[in-house]
Amino acid sequence: MKLWEIAHARAGDKGNAANISLIPYDEADYELLAKTVTPAVVKEHFGPMVKGRITRYELPNICAFNFVLEDSLAGGVTSSLALDTHGKSLSSALLEIEIDYPGRRCMV
Image 1: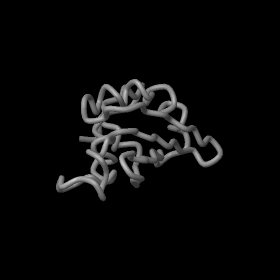
Image 2: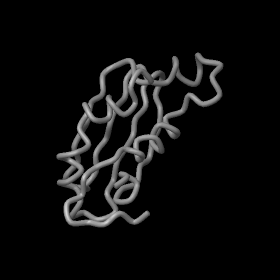
Image 3: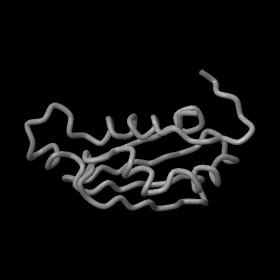
C-alpha cells in the first residue's frame, strides 16, 4: 500500500533543508509508521535528490514524525533558479513510499 493511504504530510523549507511532517490519519497506525518509515527508507526513496543526512524526530505525544532532509533543495528558494525548490513537493513524494500493512486490503 502507498503511504498516502494511511497518512498525510506537511512540509516547509529552511535554506537547503526540507522539513516534512508525517501524520497518520488513525493514531493506531503510528507504531506501524515508526517501524516502516525509517530515515534509511526515506533516503532510499528520494535517492540522489537528497544529498545530505535525513533525521527523523518522533513525536509520539501527537502521533507524528518530523523528517529533516538536509541538502535536498538545490540550494534553497533564495539561491536556485529551479522551478520548485520548496519542501512541499517532497512531502507528496514521501507519501508514495510503499509499506506493508498486515491485514489491510489496498484501497486502490
